[in-house]
Image (cartoon, rainbow, N blue to C red):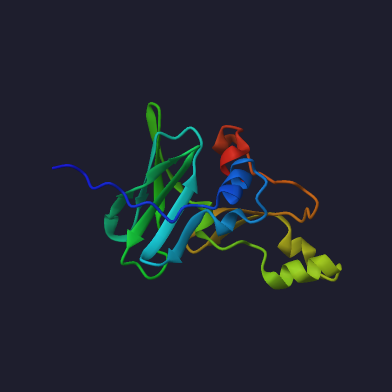
Length: 169
């Protein structure tokens, strides 16, 4: 029995794809992670150097992501109406790692935060910006938020990315 070929997520606009891969996209959350689309839920991840990516959905269901090239992987999971909790199994040459997709969660700065910061009137910046260890939706990690309106891009890097920031714009 042959495995079913994964359904790809709707393709990215070529300009948006190029900005994302260059680390210059203004809103990577809009492109990466899981999003409801016509026909189900699209999951898209950026994992440079990966050989393959599998999404592990609730109840142990697994879905192989399609290799879209340049470290992008995607799948359309049909029949889902809302974004499920999921993990990723990422295969590299000689190893496989289980990771939580940081783009599964909404951006940490909301519209009100952005509005107030832009006006210079945010009265609790220390709660909105910087890094903060936290548990959100059962996932323990660190939230990063910066205000850099003139930056061409911002990337997160550390030993957890082997000091390669290309996968976390």
